[in-house]
Length: 314
Image (cartoon, rainbow, N blue to C red; front, side):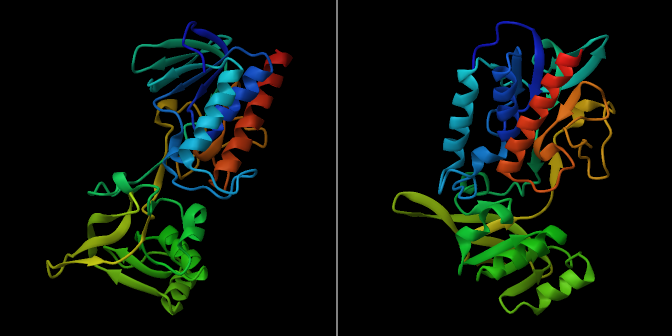
């Protein structure tokens, strides 16, 4: 992507994960002056250790896939304001003014929001260092790598129950770690309890995620937990830790400008348009189900095409 040399654009895309980068490439390819504004390039995909469900790749690391996305956008001259965080979008006549915390002020004829989601992290030692090396925030994405393995699912709710069942279906031996009784629909809890390869450990607090070095690569080797009732700690021998404590759509800067659902996701129509004319959204920040890289990329392309048509109509 090119350096930031101007402040007026046809399209400003907020976010540089798969949705934002794809939207940037599609918009620029249609001859639109396009900018991407993002704190960092890649989003959650950049943390993925191995990806085997993106079409055209039997196996690719998250950083490599994002590097290819980034290079593709660069080829079409997308301007990138990397390291900049948007804090306001202000409609002004026929344009939108996009402000960043770093002092940038960009004018955009259309805006595409593709800021994704931020997982609720445990903030314990070993978590950040082992993301993509046994620590995962997406069972749908990574469960297949843990067939017949011992794993832990951390979380108190429905997503933790779903993850446990998905992993157990693939033959994993699952320990659900939660501080409170599992909160999920009764039928779902009954399925978890009935599963022979799932055990539920309540009243536990995660202390740290342990790692070991094998063939020069660090991988998860255990999960250290504290029994809050007795004060005793133990380390569960697991090779995977799935953190299912929820996630937050990164859209706080919209400031009531757009319609949101009860989960804080931006509501969009089938073209990616939001409730505010001229503003589109794509990827995990939206109410579209299926939070996957390939879906986010497709939504980014769709939003860019819709934005281009919008500009042509004007």
